[in-house]
Image (cartoon, rainbow, N blue to C red; front, side):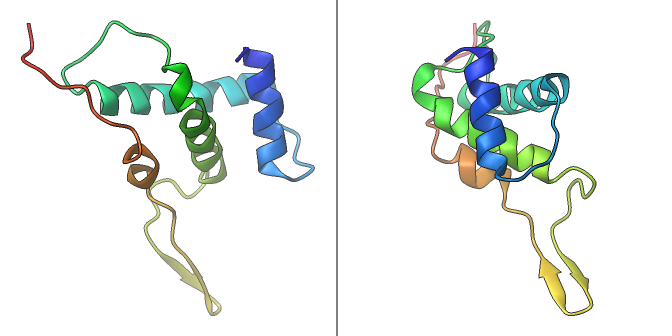
Length: 104
């Protein structure tokens, strides 16, 4: 999937009229990619791109990270009877198997 296709899908997944620049999208995409690669290869890797079969998780994680801006790390928030709890990034990462072995 090209960067432009990812950006278009990202905007569709947000589902609102919020104006998002491609530069901002790329920052969150880079964070999501790093989280997935660190999860998948806990002993390190030279890969810089997520495998195509994890594209859906990459976009989902990008959207989650973007939507959590301003409340980084928030585990629970209660205000005027409204409760917010962020979906754990680990929920998304748990669908990606780890590649482990003996580090060289």
